[in-house]
Amino acid sequence: MQHSERDTVDLTSLDRPVWSTLNNHHKNSAIGNDLARRFMPDVNLFACARDDSEAAIAALDTIIKQREKVYFLQADPVKLPPELTVEMAALCVQMVLQKPISTPDDAAEFHLLGDDDVPEMLELTALTNPGPFQPRTHTMGNYYGIRINGRLAAMAGERMRFPGFTEVSAVCAHPDFRGQGFARRLSAHVAAGIQARGDIPFLHAWETNTAARSLYQSLGFELRHEMHAAVVTKP
Image 1 (tube, one colour):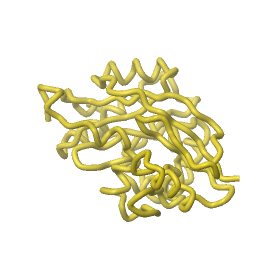
Image 2 (cartoon, one colour):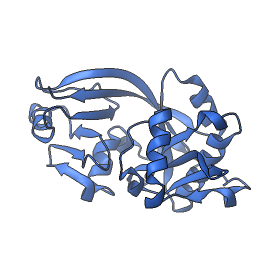
Image 3 (cartoon, helix red, strand yellow):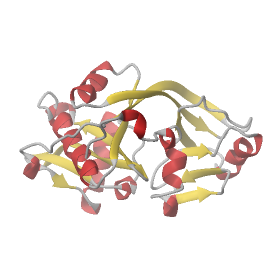
Image 4 (spheres, helix red, strand yellow):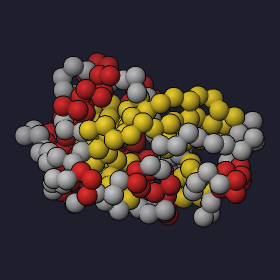
């Protein structure tokens, strides 16, 4: 799949990817209403208002319980009702891949991860912190891993998904196995699978993570938009 003219593709659904995915592919994992939605907490921790209207912002308070932690990720600055407190706010970049990419030659070594792998997936993501990863996050899409001597050395998979787009996410490698190109190869494999079904791969990285941004750029991903991320709690 190749899009030769970038401006022929409508990318606006990427501005609020959490809202887009919770109203499409992951609607069955959503809690909320037409004003604000969030994931079931065992699937993921993201939430989003439909827009910045007073009604939509106020609706966020109704879907978040006391002492819960939720994540926001969107192009617009995150607006919240007064009942919620920001624990952390930072800038991310959103990147999209509109050039063809091939799966690596050694893709046969990649294992499709499933329920039996969840304890190791949770352990690896807790160690490397690629973003929130819950006991059922792996059900959001296809996740692949590389095993070395039986250990889960690296992984990557699919997270948000809505018409025309699927996110590459949870790209991480155990510190004992870094420097071997695992993150690059897994990212390429996941992105190639997304393209094979006709979707455009996209992903997010911290604005300050120049190493990750350079890696993704070398795969053909291009910067699309600055994104606002926030971790929010309800005291």
